[in-house]
Length: 275
Ligand code: HPA
Image 1 (tube, rainbow, N blue to C red):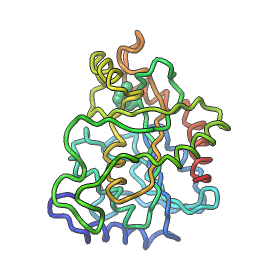
Image 2 (image 1 turned 90 degrees about the vertical axis):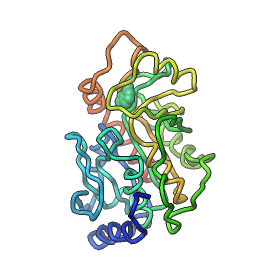
Image 3 (image 1 turned 45 degrees about the vertical axis):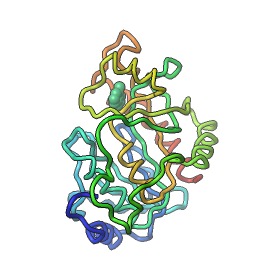
Image 4 (image 1 turned 90 degrees about the horizontal axis):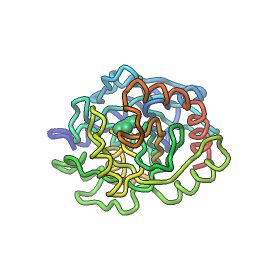
């Protein structure tokens, strides 16, 4: 919870969204870098800019749209966050709980998180995807630091089944009929905005990470706090620093993400229709 924010704060934001959309969405998808084409697959859609939702954090990245898009995918009414806020933009860990708690109050019970990641597993390649089995976050605090809002979830909560096994199983079936190579592995959070040093990536590998990135974990922890079923999907946009001779830079990450975005969006569409 954010200091001074009460349950009413989250209800206000959720009510604003609910008044503008057709049904209660039980599934939400958060689109990371390069995943935006998925939003075009949503039919009968309503778009709500984050900036209009009371108290909602707004992305400062030019390549993150900052819109809620609600509508149908595979016959199911869903809501999609096209773009997200990150810790490196200046938001606190605590502020980053807002989107997922608002979705929970809206009625969302299953959350699909996507992101762009660098791979520290030598068997993965740029353009592959990874179903997140678990994560490592050694940096900083928690999105649930501060007074607990008991209407949203308990003070102390377990994270042993953070990424729901049943959803990972469904994602693997969808992966087997997709055009992408899809792995399963561990995602490690780094705060950014700098990419990692080669030594940090060596450390990440020793700790058991397969991919690294600057998002997802605050949303995953918030989902655990309010008891949502959770699936995480990482799009491998580059080999992490030191894994190859090539230097990691933001332009390359965005270009690679755009290149595989259509296949990744199709995989996501199949998953959303199947869960
Ligand atoms: N490191 C951190 N975040 C990222 C990377 C990376 O190599 N690629 C895409 N997002």
